[in-house]
Image (cartoon, rainbow, N blue to C red; front, side):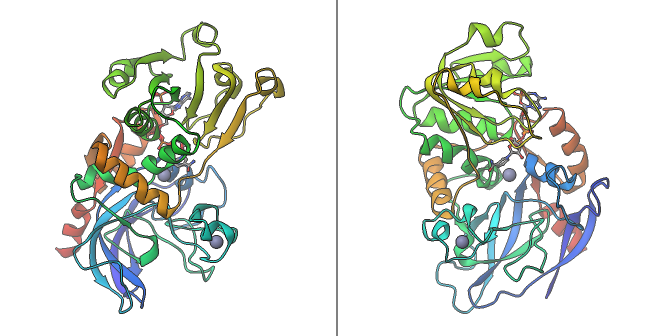
Length: 352
Ligand code: NAP
Ligand code: ZN
Ligand code: ZN
């Protein structure tokens, strides 16, 4: 067992604080990874604060991990010491069900094993995430990071990037598609960048009027301030597709009103439950869908797409000591546009 420095919370109402965990020496098909950077996703906050229920503590969050291979188990074939690698929202799944066979491990019928706030396949060993200095993972659940991209700006691709790429790709967004991205946070800003790289005409819809300039600089062709009294009437029936990344409770019906006949809104944000009127869908034959991260194969495809199009996240790099303050800023929609923790700051302390 390898003692590893981490930051954990011990309850839904406690701040994150230093905490020691142990990692396994890699078994036959496992890889030990030195964590260099970890992105901060709003899902970390939802779970730290038990907003989805079922959280267990102590919890070490973090699921946008990039690092380097430190050691490989004897039967590992895909990875070598020193490789740049990534880990996203899950570290294992059953390997046998239809979803796993289809490369959609996130929908594993036996339940994926999440990178943190979950359990390994034995159902009892708690998983601890990327706010730590090392992690041991099965070689099939690791992503290759293209060497051409800066690591700290790649970390957010491992969750935010794949979560928006997957529905944009699946629902056929392409050259000249007329789409809206709702919510300009971590997921939203990646949604704009990736959709623009796919050739779409993107409008950003935001409750923060101050983000107009940023939205246009990211490549959007237009910006709608959702707080404007007439925003939902003057833009009615304007878009073919909406990617909704809002993390807080809001009225879905208003956004559905912005879709043209046969349009689709995909929800990726996971706020508390809200009411949906059947007429919001029925009257224009609309589709309302959801999407959860993406499988390993599709995540690798997304990373390769981002390398080809030079798409990376806009990040504010922080040290682990700034994490509690960063959470408060995320809750105020004040992040431009992803916090990424430099985990070497914790490693240095571990050594001294
Ligand atoms: P984030 O960086 O905090 O961005 C969320 C954005 O939502 C904010 O920047 C803000 O954008 C908007 N927003 C916040 N409060 C709002 C309110 N009261 N009314 C209207 N808009 C509001 O969060 P994130 O990391 O992108 O995550 C977004 C959501 O996706 C979270 O619920 C997260 O758990 C979920 N998520 C889902 C998946 C999946 O697989 N489906 C994966 C990762 C994350 P503006 O300031 O532009 O309005
Ligand atoms: Zn996430
Ligand atoms: Zn499975």
